[in-house]
Amino acid sequence: MKRQPGCNAHDFQTLRTGWFRNRPVFLLYRGRMEQAHHDKINPSGEDEPGFTINDSHKDYLEIVITGLLHKTLILNASRSVLNHPDYYTKNTLWDFTRARMGLNIQELKEIIGILGLFRPQKSEFANRGAFLVKGRMNASIANMFVGMTALLPFKYRVFSDIQNAKAYVKQ
Image (cartoon, rainbow, N blue to C red; front, side):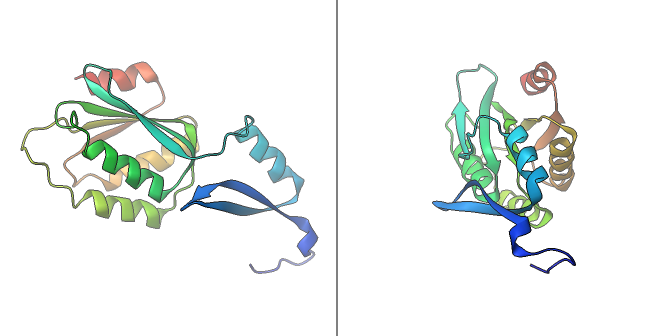
């Protein structure tokens, strides 16, 4: 890390922000303001990333992502969805409202590249995906991802309202 003028090592704090490959992930924050901001983002202290798939809905699979969102988590969730027995008949609703985006452009490109290798077994399949997000920053990252998937066989859209997201995947 490049040192800034007037800064010393005591100006920085290290915070655990999640887990990656069974190891804790740490970010370096400067000063107390970032510490307070971090607490506001995740006041419950639940920082463990993970996902669940709810297949009880008639028209769609609901994937709920929690914790710090990173490439491995998205790829594991995507693999589980693509291998789900209902995948070809149900659209997907990805709920990111309990997640914090931790992806950069390079990771988005890698995810797109891996998803680009997917070849559906049937020409007709449920290819609609709704991304439910909270906040403008998360919506911007999700919209960037949607734009990058234009050539893939999926039709993703970003929503901030659960009813609109459900309506999209029920079509």
